[in-house]
Each structure stands twice: as structure tokens, then as C-alpha cells.
Image (cartoon, rainbow, N blue to C red; front, side):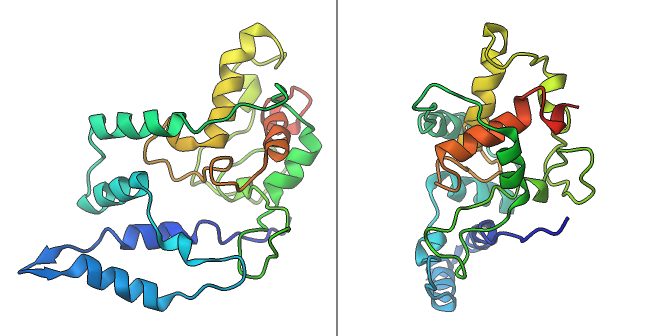
Length: 216
């Protein structure tokens, strides 16, 4: 199945590059690099220069990546604690929507590009990094396989008390992945407004509904 690749992840490359500079002999190479990057990009449509601004988590994680070592545990825990505070649970108390709609969202890579309009519904582009439905032959492997995601975790009834922990964790992971992994490269779908609450509920159903092809 043909997919359109989202440009939402392009800023990650810019983030990584921005950590590759330093100050030597009184010359502020960080500023020089930032000026060159800023001069190389122009706002176009809904793609703005805000993409070039790092938040603190991006800054620390990209610096650790360039240094070739993981972020130290104390800093990682601090990032995770801060990001966890951004997670918003469903306003209507419902975690699952329609898995069929979730599959459409997972397949779509539209949104957040200079060719999209502001009211264009964003896709989740989930298959770009994960295997999900066993019948789908086109998927990436940057992230782990999510096939049988709910089944392997014993979710036979997502509304049951026994499923509460994994359901809430999955929601939090989709909302802001860095709440659980400080330097995760998974898009922070809810926190960054990539997907709205209703869309997240549909993706949740794709992952956890026993009737979803993900769990067959």
C-alpha cells in the first residue's frame, strides 16, 4: 500500500546537527552554526521557523548523542518527570475509539508539511517505524513491532480493571513518548499537537481492541 511520508520528523535532523558545534579559541561556533541554519531555512505555509528551536529535552539528548554516550541517569529521569506532567488523559474518560479509523491514521503520513493546509488532518505515519497489521507488507523497523500489541500484554477487555495500567501507559506513550524514555525519537503525538484526542483514541483502539487486526 502506498504511503505519503510526513516531513514532521525533518526537524530531528536539524536538532542533531545543532549539537555538533562548540566554542574554540573564543570563537562561538554554536552561534555561527545557528546563524547558518537559520539563514538556510525560510517559513513556507504552515512550516515555520519554530521547528528550529530546541526544547531542553532535545538539547540534552542531541548533545549526548553527539558525544556518543547515553544521557546520564539523573538528567534522563528529570526529563521523563517533566514530560510526564504534560500527558493529558482523555477528556471524556474514554481511551478507545474505532480501530478502523485508527488504521487509516496509522497508514497516513499527511500533515505538517509546507504543502498541507492548516486544517488538513494529520496522519500518524505509524507504519513508517512499526509493523502493526500482519497483512501489511510495507512498514519500517525504526521502532519495535506492534503486532499483537494488546494480545501479548493480556488485554482481552480494555475496559477491565486488570487492563488499566497498560491502557494508561499506552495513552501516555502516544501522547508524549519522552515521559517514559527521555531521548525517545518517537513523535510526541499528543503533546506536540500532531494528533488530536479523538485520533489518539482511534489509534489506541488499533493497538488494544481485541477485534483489531493488530491483535489477530
